[in-house]
Amino acid sequence: MVAVVPPLGAGPIAGQQQLARAQARQRLGVLLLMFVALPPVLALRLTDLAVFEATAAAAVRPAASAPPRADIVDRNGVELARTFEAYAIAVEPRKLASEPRELARRIAAILGDRSEAAIYDELTHRGSFRYIARRVLPAEAKRINDLGEPAIELRREGERLYPNFALAAHLIGYTDDRGTGVYGVEKTFESRLSAPATRATPLRLALDIRVQQALDSELRALVADQQAEGAAGVVVDATSGEVVAMVSLPDFNPNAPGKDGQPAFNKASYGRYELGSTFKALTLASGLDTGVITSMSKTYDASAPLSIAGFRIRDDHALNRWLTVPEIFTHSSNIGTARIAAEIGRDRQKAMLEALGFTRRVEIELPELRDPQLPAWSNWGELATMTIAYGHGITVTPLHLASAYATLVNGGIYRPLTVLKRDGAPPAGRRVFSAGTSDEMRKLLRLTALNGTARFADAAGYRVGAKTGTAEKNENGRYIRGANVSTLAAAFPMDAPRYVVVVMIDNPRGSKASAGFKTAGMVVAPVVGRLIPRIGPLLGVTPDASRDLDVSSLLPTGTKVAE
Image (cartoon, rainbow, N blue to C red; front, side, top):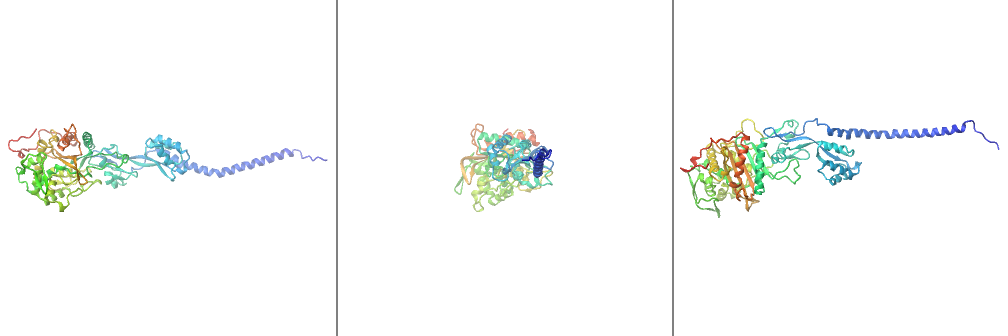
């Protein structure tokens, strides 16, 4: 056998060449894979930089754009509502990279006010997009972004903040999740607050937040003391019609209006009540204006209950004798007022109520308004005329009453109420009562605060005039035995009226402070007596013991005014 010998070096070289060719093929494959894989990787990285890291940077970068909604301020420029930058936390559940249970736990630990279970439900939802949370502060949004989950998105959005929380909530209102006004001033002035041309300028209200706080604190204490269902209070500039304060209890936090269910309705502008004997002032003013009351010394028979159409009109503080006009007013005689109303007549009574706005919604820039309830014209006979004269059989809002009392004491001029600060001279308005009638009614109101049922509303040096009203509560046309609506309407100072105050409490129960009574004279009058010295100096009205109205002409000869 002949052995075949390979050329010198052929064996090792051939092996090396084969190895080199194999390595070359391997390197070429790797390069080809890199060329195929690199574009998607770069695209993912660019997306990450453009979206997620840009969002993280935005979480700590202040907003450069103009605010999407104008601020709301009180008459002195105090901030009532403003917009600040907040964030919405959204997720695309189908793209989630993290384990949802653990991610939900970590997000819940950051947010604090959302449960882990609720967040988990959003992370695992079958939809393509879900909100995890809205109204998230920038610091919390950044911490969530730092978790590094690419399916989570941070969206910048304007958040409405009400720094005074529930204070004046019913007046200011609130916005929904889209930033649209849905209640109060926020709703009425939606266009003004959101329009690009006007949103840089704050909306200035007539409200004085200091007066609002004083009224709010007094009413909260009253509701708590009386275990009442609620209360309403209004302070109105008698000349301009500006609403300086308005409280309705219960109220709500406009920063989270739906947290405890729907916000309570506005008892001042939407609640309808029989406001009782406060209407007697309007009846007497009509009597003076129509010439029915020819003299304050004119007397009316109140010696016995008045029977009319099968109904008996009685006096709560019966004197059982003939009464002069001032006695009818200061002792709050239903009988005497009914007899005056009968002389005025149905037609003139309705005309007076129409002129004061009692046959329609109160004129004011609020959406939460309600029509009064009056008898149908076919049922407005002599009995209805008599009972309406003392506030029975007609339901109105406390704002209606405040507007009427402003007209009554300001010289007789009706001007629509407003939530906005009025600069310059007040609107011309229209005359409802003569100036002489207004003067006489101011004296009667002052006398009632000195000698009558409203004496606990008087405040030294402020020359308060007032009238009480206590009525049985009416719900859906039914009177609830033992449940009252107690109201007091006041104005000060009566020698030159500046402000009207109306306070109403819904179903007081009586307390030690009111000696067990539920009447306006015992329950509401003391509140007004404390309130006026608190708000007078804030409104530029200082006490002056040297000034007062001369009411001696209303009294029988020799009678002294209580001091």
